[in-house]
Image (cartoon, rainbow, N blue to C red; front, side, top):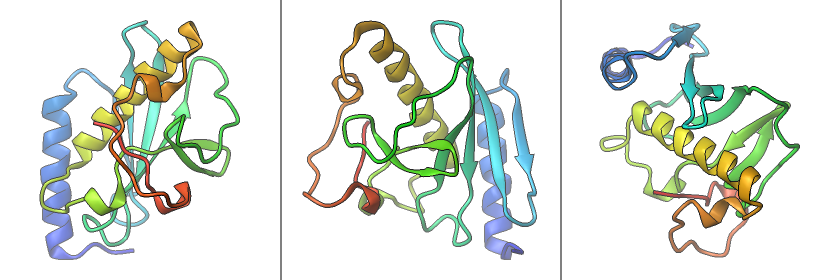
Length: 158
C-alpha cells in the first residue's frame, strides 16, 4: 500500500530515530513503500542474538504495530495468547510480543523505536525466565488492565 505524504515523513523520522538509538545494530527495512516491515537485530545481556520484526500497520502511526521474534539462537516456545508471557495470537509461526496496551497507544507519543525497546525488554525477561523458572510477568511491570481477552491487545509493560 502506498504511504501518504504524512506517513512518509513520519517514517523518515522513525528511521532516523532508530539509527540514533541502535547505531551498532543491523536494521533492515523490508518493502518500505508497501507492506512495510522493519527488522532489528538485538543482542541481549547474555550475548544471545535475536531478530525482531515490526509490521508497520496501514494506518500508521494510528494503530499499535505488531512485533514478532523472527530469529533466535534456539527455537522459541509455541506460545500463543498469554497475559503471563505478554504475548498475543501468533503471527504465522512467530511469537507476537505484546508491547503496548492498545488504548494507551498514542500516534503522537509512541514511536517505532519505543516498540523495539519494549521488544528488547521482553527478550531480557524471556531469557531470565528461562534461567530462573519464574513467569515472565514477574520481570515485566504490568499495569492494571481490564478483564478482556488478550486478543484485544490488552498486554502492556513499562
